[in-house]
Length: 139
Image (cartoon, rainbow, N blue to C red; front, side, top):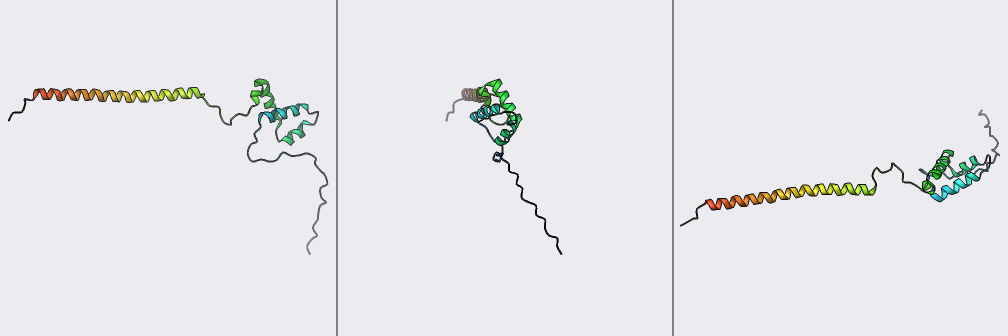
């Protein structure tokens, strides 16, 4: 005969904490949102910061990074940045490199064109010299 199933009583403990919604991928924070979170975190009393951070879905280390960015660079430090490594060259330097490359290419083409012109002059000179050496045809 099978044993009767033991049913545990329902969990009556209620949590008042609100969890941040789960998102796919990384969450991005704008300047205004970062400022709001920093101001609210600074206003939190003893023991209130951890629940607030859980509710917002961020870590204390992220809060520390934002505070450091704010003190070092002001509001510009909190502005969202593009992910990935910073470009090694700024747009002006990239344009200069592209123009220098184009100049080298055009100089090479100019050298080839000048060589062809010189070759044509030599061929014309040879043809003219050959015509002078040939006696006129008489019939």
